[in-house]
Each structure stands twice: as structure tokens, then as C-alpha cells.
Image 1 (cartoon, one colour):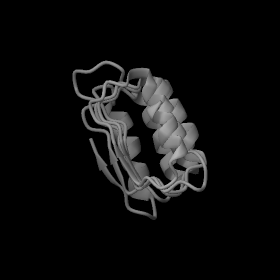
Image 2 (image 1 turned 60 degrees about the vertical axis):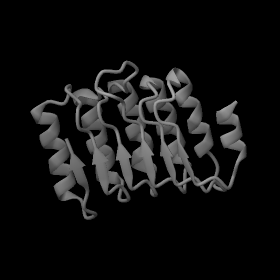
Image 3 (image 1 turned 90 degrees about the horizontal axis):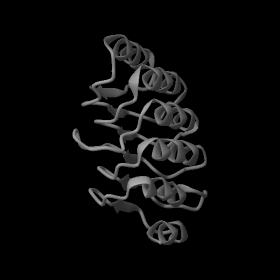
Image 4 (image 1 turned 180 degrees about the horizontal axis):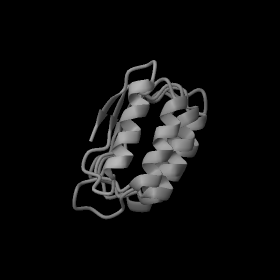
Length: 163
């Protein structure tokens, strides 16, 4: 119901639903991003345990989203429902096509090397993102970190990357 209300509201600019224990329902909040007439610029869904479903849904929503500049899909270090490799890969596909997102907080998820490689590929196409927080992801290898750092260094638009 709340996601439906957000989808219907075209004037809301900032939503913070941190620690709301939304679980798989986190993905339904991607609906609030749809449409060119949205004003939503900040969406904080920290610690809602959305898992891969959230990664997939938000990746899809980012393709047609034209106002969001800040997105927090991070989790707590001890929580379940983290975004994994498959969710990160699908999220990266949408990020590559998005031109408004500036800050992405993805910390304490488990994106792994495949997810990191997908994000690196997306970052070579995306020119709007300036801050990416991946700290606390114990599945990132040194090689994955090196690839992400290299892509960030090669970008024309500087990107602050936090591990």
C-alpha cells in the first residue's frame, strides 16, 4: 500500500524508510521511481533486506528514472536479505543507462566478483555517478577492487569509490 501511494504521488522529493524490515517488499518501491513526471530525488531504504529482487527491480527502474540523485540500498553488516551477484548484475544494467543518479550506497551487500565486474562495466558508460559506497562487502576480491578502481580512474567524470 505504501509503495502504491508513493507511485501515485508525483510531488514527493525525499523518502527515508530505514530499518523498516520491508524484506522482499523493498523491490516494490522501485515503482515509485517510474515515469518522467516524478520529482523523487532521494530514496533511502537502508536495512530493509530486499535481496536480489531489490537489485533487479531498481536496476529496471533506473532505466526510465529521470530525477533520482541519491539511492541507498545498503544493509547492516549482520543482516540477511543482502543484494548478491545476480541482483548487482541486473542493477548495473540499469545504472549504465541512467543519467541522473549521483550517489549510490550499496554497502554491506554481497555483490561478489561478477557483480563488481558488472558495476565496473556500467560505470564506464554512466557519467552521472560521483559517489559509490561498497564498504563492508566481504565478497569483493582484490582483483574486483582493482578493476573498479581502474574504471573509476579512467572516467572523465571523477567518481569517489569507498570500499
